[in-house]
Image (cartoon, rainbow, N blue to C red):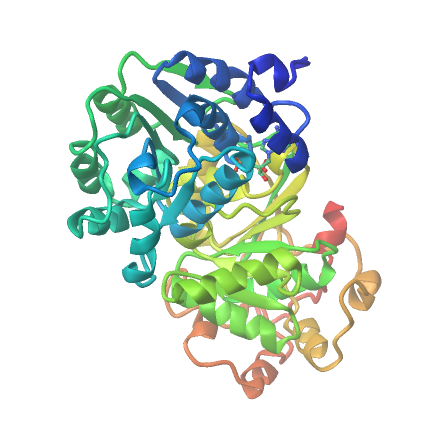
Length: 465
Ligand code: AMP
């Protein structure tokens, strides 16, 4: 059992005070392992799932090492960039810097975050005032370097956070350009949720005799997340999703889609059905994304829909449920996605809606996580969906659900009335939502053999709880 406290890790009183204020009492396993090594000056290759407390694992010893440079002076010369934290997405950048700021609250160390999608001119004056800890997405940092608004010749610590994602997103050339500008003598810390061969190559290239730490089996999914798969036709997924949401008591649900288009349309559709949903994706402005995230954190939006890229790095405390509307084609993304729930020891549910065309990806995921996920064939009621639209129960009241026959399944069949135009295609997204379209869909569906399809309304969530 891990009984050491932060004080045992020899952290400075001003950092300990900030931790107490943040409500941290004991270090998480990654923190207990990483903090002493970073304080010793080692390079680090850390395999840690999201939600393990990895930000504090690098930020706390980093701040401690920078304390001698803390200064109350207003002169920019007294506030050189000493630590650079590179992250793949804007959202993660914001979150990491928020954490750094909180941990540095009682020191005079300055931190700043820069990312793309916002007017670069608004960031420049802050950079020019000087900061010790700079959190940045690679592209925007290069813009600032070109504009000469930042100098990196005093950087002594470099963090590559979510390095696997940086590679996936094609940041390698940007990383190489940035790294070439840093002093050779520096400490490097690399964090990655998954350990691919590319990551091992990257670590061999950028790290010097790194210490390897891994808090959970790489590519493992958190033990405290209940995983479940519903086998369902692509074209039935939106109905099933609405049923799941209506039947769920989860206060917040994060839904993943494959494309920005699906995320946007799904959010609009759910809004029309009275669900407080919003989408977060790359086509939205930074302000819209931040507003959606804030509304989700505050609870005014209960369902947030996003793609992998947009949802990466979201840190919502105690997120109870994640739904994969479409499962990712890269199995590692599944690990990242479901890592959004069950964070910092809390329990969570991860539900995946899997169409016949996606089953091959599901197999890949199961191979990666070395676990078979519980599966159930979903039989979807368009009639129930339609009546729910006209006679909507308030959130938390599940009148249909309580009348639904339990355990009635049509077997492991994906049969549905209107066959999709092509495998995996969802005709529902072809046109903008209009009530008449759903009325047509409410016609009692027929199986290919002419028999009516069984109507089993929204029994899904109850079976899991
Ligand atoms: P991370 O893996 O860095 O994204 O952290 C996941 C969540 O755990 C964040 O909300 C942190 O604030 C929280 N956290 C990190 N370390 C601790 C700790 N030692 N005790 C309690 N919560 C923590």
